[in-house]
Image 1: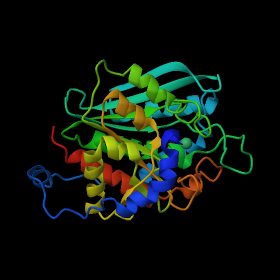
Image 2: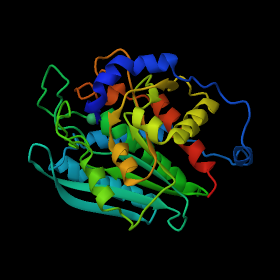
Image 3: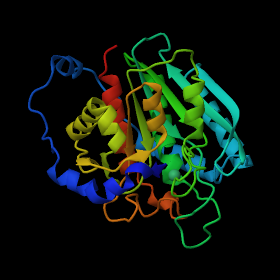
Length: 329
Ligand SMILES: [Zn+2]
């Protein structure tokens, strides 16, 4: 993903000013009728150790860079694992061309739960990893482990999938692992150079005419003390989804991760799903203290298993289950 270039200047000036002068909603004292009804639903317990293992297993394949053996092996693993949880798993295989002219053999993997349900939620993450550590001072041309950037979102969603297989939710759920997100141009001067797998999917949805009530993207959701601020495109296009998820997190005691503060604009997979027509949000770690607004391990060799914390995976995963299981259809 990349900071949106067209409004980067805006961000530089206003990122934190918005947080300071924007709304800072307190937790609501009153519940809606729907949420009162839904509060009787027993939400499964998200197993953070299981999610952690799903992250470390991906990392053990090596960097999941398109056109490598590790990439193929991990795609096979993702498909096989999802197939343990639901018979409805679709692989999309194609070749897309990166900004630098490289043809990337890509594979999107999409699992569906309650495929007959009209009301649906799309949960998604990218599973590929960046081919370069271009934010690192050392070995910057070598690929990164991508434990957080790639591995964490997929790890959380694999555990969500496992839970969905054990107890069916009322609503339909699709879990999409999109490929070829992170072979984008540093600085982002090439238009649409990131999120190639998601862009492919928006032109070739796995189900003709596919739609969902809303979408939730997980990107860099596994590091210790992660802070999720309200990403710009998410707040502009799907504020009710932001509110739903941030309130669910607060109700579970995770307000130290999910901050009611404005974040920057990030051209990430959700940007293309929004353009496709599904209001979507990006749960993405941000850091006020770094120059680029991302965590210091972003696109460096420090993005390895040492930054991953099961407590963060738990906060994100339990929040997602809370929202998914309390949705009616
Ligand atoms: Zn990345």
